Length: 82
Picture 1 (cartoon, rainbow, N blue to C red):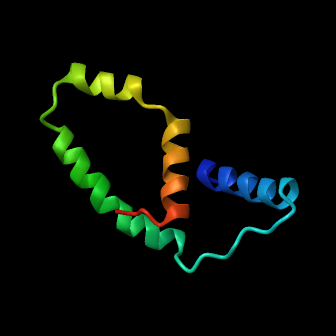
Picture 2 (tube, rainbow, N blue to C red):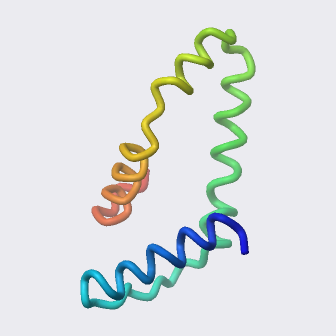
């Protein structure tokens, strides 16, 4: 199984057992989300093509995955998906 799917499965099980509630069903499939995300990711990668290596390394070093995940979850829950 793919790592992302395993992580999602663990998260789902955590939601089921630790919170005593079920996760609401989504009307948007994962494939729909990927189809929407890929063009944005591609555009961002193209923008970064001209950035010098030092700046790129700073971006990577400063990236906080936990903060990014929390911000993404907050945006989804609040409907701030611009």
